[in-house]
Image (cartoon, rainbow, N blue to C red; front, side):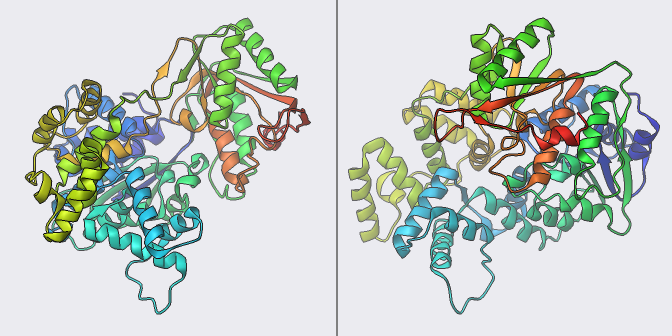
Amino acid sequence: MTLNLKQELVVNSRETLIVVEAAAGSGKSRVLVERIARLVESDVAPSKIVVITFTNQAANVLKERLASRLGKDITLGCCSTLHSFMLRVIKRWGGQDNAGFAVIDSEQTKALLQDAIDETRYKGSLEALEDTVESYDLTKQRLTMSKTEIAAASFFGSLARQNVLTFDMMLTRGLEVLRTLQEWPYDWLFVDEFQDSGKADGEIYEAMPCPNKFFVGDMRQSIYAFRGVNSDNLDRMRWQAGTGRFTLTSNYRSAEVICQAANRLISHSANEGDLPFMLAANEGEGKITLLQSTTAEREIVDVADWVQENPSDDVAVLLRTNFLVQQWADGLENYGVPVRRRKPPAFPHDWLKAKTFLSFLANPENDRLAFAAISLSRGPEVASEVRRTALKELTSINQVATNLPGNQSLAEVMARLPAMGISQESMLMLEELRAGLESDARPEDLIFQIGLESFGGKEEGQGILVTTYHSMKGREADTVILPAFEQGIIPSGKSPDVEEERRLAYVGMTRAKRRLVISHAEKRRPRFGGREHVLTLPSQFLNESGL
């Protein structure tokens, strides 16, 4: 694996705290893999190494690249998302206070929120309650409480009584466990896409007692503020005393003309600071094409014509929203352009039942899960009768109706599901998810994995890729087309954060290797509010890019 001088400096650095600011296309994944590989080759035990990635897919890709580099499979201490790692921390070091808990998904969380609303007769909005729950400090003593805080307290009380955690709570509970640790088997921490970490993430990384920490990211590619991401983590960490700070600026992906346009765009960022611009290391010729159409409908035709006149096996069309993705994928196909797009997942008819039964089998003494399982299998009337009997006898629903053992292995739980009527289709989906887990995984690991999966469906079709800017993160294409490049779309009229919208446009532009096409329409029908065309303006980012 050939590295440039700056990459070699990063890979061979002996600093114990390293922050790498890596520009788009600068080979950060290559550096990450090479540094880990050389540690292993220098007799560092792989079990001492933890790697945190932003997605499960990224973790799997990193494992594959590491195996290819070393010529063999190795088992790291962990290579996963932060949520998955925190689940492991809680299970291993959480003690009796964290024993036997269940992880509930978003649907079950909403059900508990609704219970809290009903119990406290809360009249506010669900959004306001969710915001309060997200920021609620369980350790704070309150002399007075708002109605929203009372509902939030009821919600957390239900979680405690039922011994369940939401996905977001995995991070806060994991942080609590980390701060009380007496032992820690990991010496090396690697964090990829550090710019996409949240406030709780940053606190967790600081609390991990690893003597060697390595963070890599790019503030210019921080595009997940809607998920609670805080790019300040990267900025704060790089100025921390004792930090070995490195920058990778050579872009090996994009042609020079594309790098220059992206540099001009991001130079308008208010927090650009002292970060150096990308330097094009790709010697191939590049070209940027601008298309202007009279209407949004005509824009699709014009782009379709351009694609057919400039054939390529590697084209990606990036849109700001899923609605536009659907509109453009259908439109291009109607004009004879083969399209590859992400299809909505086709869940088995009994997928909800499979998830409910799995959660119940993992924690049979949880009355909410038991009631839900019996409701699905024997009907709500039977479930209500069983619950009344359990309350009368001061015991659990499980003890009255099923008497299932606790602490079953994942293999035992999976073996029970077909006998409970779960279809072969659902079992195949569960087995596929199970295959991505560690060999010693427990039922709660599989439940957690189901919650982490976006289930956005698989890309289908043969042709150009039509997807969102966010979905294209970490990917590239020879030709990238950015349609609907207009004010109100990018930057979005719904987003108050123009800075993040600028970074999103920057990410879109830097996905292109050789050709970048940007188009916009003079008129467009609003999605809501009438059939008449309204005048539009080209995105301000077009002018900021010098195009």
